[in-house]
Image (cartoon, rainbow, N blue to C red; front, top):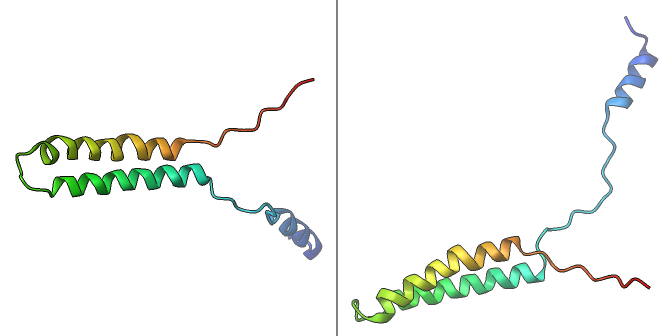
Length: 91
């Protein structure tokens, strides 16, 4: 059987060091603005969808285009966008 000192040393080795780095959200201001724009386009699409007449241009053509644009284009782009890094000038 191992001595108490050896057990204490092995236990201290297995403990993980506390991570002192601060947690940052991966989204920046650009991402939130893009998500807000996408949500705004989706809301406008649903408003257009609810407008009478049901067989008109706005509710049949424009509303689905806005909804697809918001859900499938703007929001995914906003999620994957990264803020451009500052260019370093070489002298």
